[in-house]
Length: 163
Image (cartoon, rainbow, N blue to C red; front, top):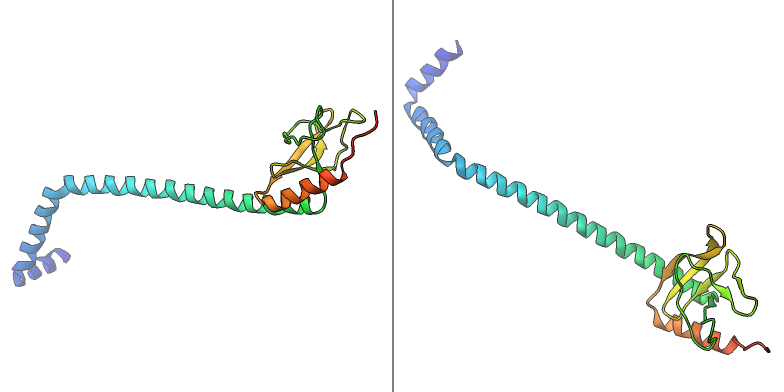
């Protein structure tokens, strides 16, 4: 029944059959181009996904850096312990994650929970390592003003012990 209605329609509208046949011929001749375009679109979609993932990663990294900078700034402002070189207490040194911070007078590690900072913008909390307290929970700030103020406070308060 459907077939007879289709045939009646084609008899009344022969241009529909010509138009349909023309579309089929065009599709047959352009199938290679369609496949190439689909492949290009697929590659473009993959590139867009990779770029989007990269942008999301950068944004997440930036947000983490900003949060760490705020933590570091607060640590400097609240009076972190500025680390100095063991052999030259007038020289600042850097913090290293997983390494102990040694009290040069008593020759012992600083206790767990101590907030330490260096002259480069790094702050940390002393955490329990495998068998000794070490630098952990590090946060960095690029706010040179806050760091310089902490260095000045350290220089004013630091007195060489009598030997």
